[in-house]
Length: 535
Image (cartoon, rainbow, N blue to C red; front, side):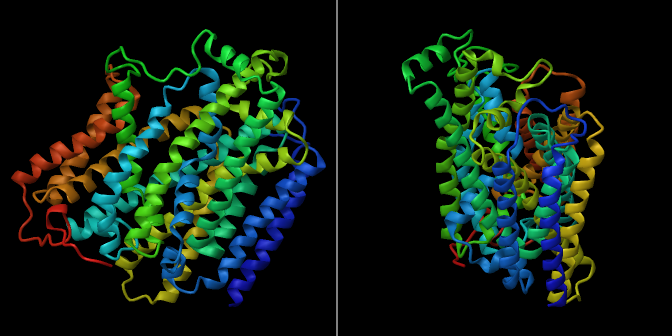
């Protein structure tokens, strides 16, 4: 109890510090030349007020986090709709919140089909993977890999996930901070510290329950911010939809263009985008603890399935909203080119630029808080799931005699450590080429994420797959993606995940035929041997 009270005091001090830092941040932007966007007193009040609310959520739920079951799984008491909004918020980072409209502003809607891959993946997740995650009573999905294959495969899965999350967190914090600094004059380091430290504080206090409920709030702020921006543009255009449509359609390239029906494997032809989008979405929905942990916090398997279906239902309107925002921004600035950011500023800042310069005082601060929110919803999920995986997949294996209280203490320590690592790494890489680093991270995600997805597919869909066979499948997947990149083969980047997943599955299955496991029971571990059991 003393420790918890101490954390609450730290929480209060941190919020007060943020309230001091934010106004000062506008005076000294670091490594990001500020444009002419301005922030008013009402904007600061809205932003700081929002930060107070989300940390308050963490403090509120801290009263219920008394066991590891509470901290990791929220006692399985999260409503399905809240889990669904949390999945949505986690899946939509600040990078995508700004990047999707920026892409639609610059080009067209072809990449919207990548998001629609979630709809194709939803039934696979519900009918083929969710039963194992729920009925085996696991805390991390990598526990299934030990039951199905071996402890070594479980450790590989868990550590691969942890390393990828650690690699992503710094860039997920830095890129939005750079954009915010560019258009508002905020100090880059202040943005990083505010987002990184505050989400660490409310996560360590309230566990997964605080993460999910702050995600619910953050998803509402994100969607509300997008609607507000579009409404502002419509009002500025006097709701003359005919003229707006003419601008978008008669441009050099039709802004609503979606389907490329001609082209080869190296182009964004329709089938490439659909196949690529399916595998891109299949990877996180089958092998990522961040998303799977949401499925595990609901009351039962039926509620978990509802959360997945609901998220799939959100995808279409959300995609239309954010792609539509990019097109609306194109229409708005087509007749007001003098209002665009200056030369040398990338399209990535177009959304925060519009918010900071065109929205009324107070509302601008709240929507900028939405960009903070999008970043924090991704980072908080990462640091909590890192702690969950390390405690359950590593610490409990090394220290099986530790009691639940000690494991809860270790989970909180690891949560703080992961949050500090992400924050510090974002500060350090601010001196590097963040875009190139992001490309490298996407490569790592492809290498390890695709192979891990392949391992789960082999485990669930085949009875022949063996531990040695899937290990060779992992090696084949990583090797094929390295060759794909080094040889610069003529294949579109959308298909990278497909190559990685399928090479793991094919090689892993063939190798398993020649290297079978001996006498490993498979009851309830494959689709073919799954009994119709209830939780």
